[in-house]
Image (tube, rainbow, N blue to C red; front, side):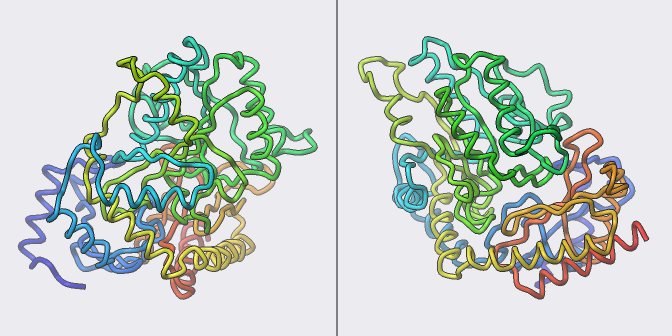
Length: 460
């Protein structure tokens, strides 16, 4: 590590942070007596804090973002060169990087053709919601305006996306929300809501159809789902679920919006999570791993059929998508995304994700055999979760404070892991793992050994 500051500088920085920075997802009372965390350097999967302490990051920047790891000089150089040449122009005009990255992106998404640039996953999802509402107003006479979302799924921090939030603790205290967002049941087979059904996946999908019929098919414009639920517990879909969901959407003429903010750009071993399940979406939204955090960028990708709905009557002054994302015009994003994609391809990181993902899941299953508190292990590629329970028979969730204790013990031992955090009342009991796609076998072992010790320390 390069020591960037001396001791006096460090103390000044810590106090400046304590006195002026409002951290995300943080109760700040603790920082009256303990120093806030400050990260200063990264390389590969390694991080160093302001005191020089080294960590192995198993959650890619804390929120599943740094897919290609830290310290990628080639991405930084691409961003620097673009900023010197031209840093910004509003998205009403194009740019070289935006054109080339759009071309590369849709090459990997058969059936998709148009890319709308924004700056965050929340904003990208909000764009879809607005498009669905505009399609309703201009093509369905105001019908088909409702948007379905799934229990346990999460789509962002704006009031619009929180209206479509399947995690009650995320949206608590922020209402009232815009109307027309309707929840459908989750599909976590481990917590089976349909024990008498012969096929759980089909039953979970049929529960969506039941909501559609209750609300009225002519009122439903879109269904918004994560291909694999992320912060709601790392929920991989059961067999039979996605084919039936696709069938239901086609039957009732409902647009299918796949939120790939977490799963996209290699996290599951495919370019997009939905490609594991033969899904044919109308909208796809991506953020986080698009540029691995080296620049702020998100994308809303759609089909030519949807695009055509916004230019069918050019004589009408309201007949286009009247929207802008100010920082969707930052030209560093697309060039960072292009270089990020090149790294994934040239270094074979999709293949590495599959190989290391199998090793990671095998390690979690070994720990499950050793530690009775692990009730279930789920995941795909390098997107993994371990649900902690008090009793495997009853599946009673582990106390949240004890799950937090495991995370803290791993941190104290030099490995950063995650957990479902203030998402589901009484159900924040899943440990979450999403290391960079460049992880190697030794790093997987370090994570497993550290988790093993933490579980032993906390639970005996």
